[in-house]
Amino acid sequence: MSSIAFVSVSKRYGDVDAVKAFDLSCAPGEMLALLGPSGCGKSTTLKMAAGIESVSSGEIYFGDRPVSGLAPGARNIAMVFEDYALYPRMSVWENVAFPLKVRGITGQPAAQRIGEVLQLLGLRQMAEQDVSGLSGGAQQRVAIGRALVRDPEVILFDEPLSHLDADQKVQLRAEIKRLQKLRQVTSILVTHDQTEAIAMADRVAVMNHGVLQQVGAPQDLYERPANLFVANFIGEPPMNLMKAAFAGGGRVVGGGWSATPDAARLGVLTQGEGAIIAGIRPEHVAVNPPEMPGEAQGVIVYREPRGDADVLTVALGTGDGGGEKLIAEIPGPSPWRAGDRVSLGLDVKSLLIFDAATTRNREALQ
Ligand SMILES: Nc1ncnc2c1ncn2[C@@H]1O[C@H](COP(=O)(O)OP(=O)(O)OP(=O)(O)O)[C@@H](O)[C@H]1O
Image 1 (cartoon, rainbow, N blue to C red):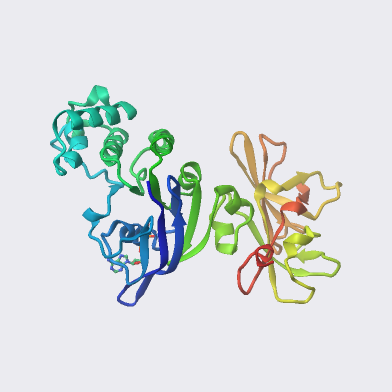
Image 2: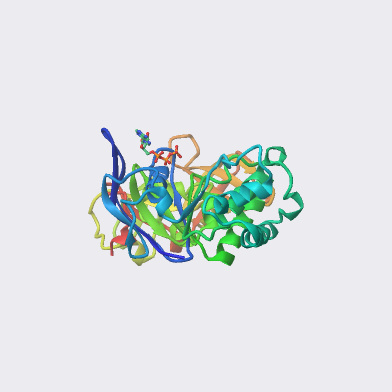
């Protein structure tokens, strides 16, 4: 078990800056997720940790050992890939035994470790089966077994669940988390799926265009996104982001709404300074009858029932289509229908204020 640190790591492919001045540490025994849209540089970052790609500048440390000059085989890492990368004509047992065999570990010591890992993963019954006949979920368990069997310092997971169906995903992400905690193996998980990152990781690092945007516990990213990119990327339905301006006395006004956010949310801003964007999560928008006081009035234009919740799109103002639209997520099934006039209550404690120019959360600027 070892820490991993990226210190000012960059990677260039010709003209493309795939990863830029990346600084991040993963504590011993921690599971850290690298999350971001396609092309943001997360796989390149993982490959540099694995030694499959070289760094253009900067250094990567496992503990206090610099590793960027070391070949993959000298780094004591294991990788789990999205396509399992198993040997198809070998049995479950033989696949898990492989990393030990290439290191000259055979006989009883090997059998004991393989047996233990198969037991942990619930694969004992299938030990003699060919892996090619197994379901995707079972094949990925074998790949995880193969990663765990030689007690690596670090496990790097590259989109390990993306080929699995929804049921298998839920099962396996709980399973990976359980094993990772049980074995306390320092792990990095690359994923584009926020649900996966939030469910599995201790901390999540969000990347965009090769740049680390924010790293923190999932709840921190959700409640205090550092900038508009993270605010919009984390959460489903996404945060409402609305153009706004200061109106004096700490009030903020937008197209068809006005509110007085918590003073702390305003940062060091004084009235008249720069354009701002206000952000509020859909679950922090209450929907009430039109005669009730609220921060905004509007008309429901769309209702999406989700069983235990309703997601309502509300056009602010008279609903003639000219104003801002807000998404509210309320307990369902609700009585509201498209065409209903409503009053909206914005939970001002949860209203975030971003600088339009820098995109940064004003609160984080303090
Ligand atoms: N071998 C390569 N040669 C040239 N450019 C590359 C290479 N590998 C990646 N890139 C570029 O580097 C950038 C980051 O790619 P990377 O694969 O790390 O992103 P990603 O976030 O993992 O995306 P995805 O989820 O689609 O794999 C992209 O612009 C990509 O086109």
